[in-house]
Length: 117
Image (tube, rainbow, N blue to C red; front, side):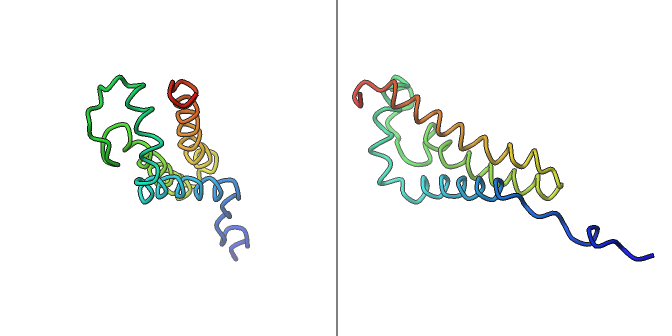
């Protein structure tokens, strides 16, 4: 008995998942590689909102700032893993969540920052 044509080929990755994976890679690598340009924009509001509880370490590997690049890269990893299991909906959600969280966090940060209003 011959194998049908649709059984031989794996399903193609939807464009939305590809686009969100690209956004996550751009966010993660942009934060990591461009930290020296982004740090002056993010350091002051984050430290003021957290009340200085973070400490004086404002490197890319310090606590609140490490989330800005690990979350998107973990999203890419989760998306690839979900696609390997052929879980398209889960892959879409895993790809979407980091971008939404970082976008909402940055929006909230700048709306509640006194020195940028």
